[in-house]
Amino acid sequence: MGGIFLNYRVIYDPSGLRRWHKIFINSPHVKYPKEAVIVEQGQRPAHLYFIINRLVEYVLGSEKGEENLIGFSQIDTPDNYKYLDDPIFRPFWAELEKLDVPFYMHPREPHPENLKQMQGHPWLEGAAWAFGVETATHTLRLMCSGVFDEFPKLKYILGHLGETLSFCIWRAQNRINKTGRGIPAKRPLPDYIQDNMWYTTSGQYHTSSLLNAMMEFDSDRVLFATDFPFETVEDACVWFDNCTISENDRYKIGRENAIKLLKLNL
Image (cartoon, rainbow, N blue to C red; front, side):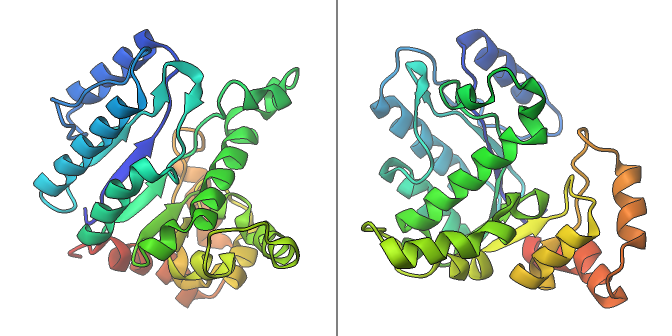
């Protein structure tokens, strides 16, 4: 594979963190820095900075395109955490840009404090709604904070046809144009959407949503994906094989775009 993916998740209790660490460190499918330090309750931001740098060192020491990394960012308590726009993560972004490999922002549940907006509505948690809101917000933070200005060659992948950003990005930029409020970003947000990002079809088997993403992002930026185990591979393939797009776009989205982005030798 021609890409390095960091599955950025947060585990809220040490026992759960140890469980996930054991799963991944023993998995035959995931190469993991076995000397990596686990972030547990009681550790401070300095420890987090150390851990991210260890991950960066691991990326640098690995053969390009063969590793999967798992990162955790909880500090002390479930609601004390860092998003990836925080300055302490700049060394990580710098190394990813040097490696010229894509970063996949995997969805996650919002942190406990933010989950209160779903209280009493558990059907909105997880993949139904909460994952997408959290991931879209995280991505907007990265764009607005200037990460893509500092590292303009970053390659960033979002699932689920962009986590609603194809529909919402115009309004976000329109309001920023009128209010500003000191935003650090040097370019309009749609520029980062079009220049730095790719979008998968995972879990969004809806043709009008795909057409919207193609119009906003361009079909060269869309990648076929399934969202297993949340969705079935069969459902993804049946929909994609029959959705009303051109055969040229179907070929690009289904194969060629991923080959180019991930530099696959196929």
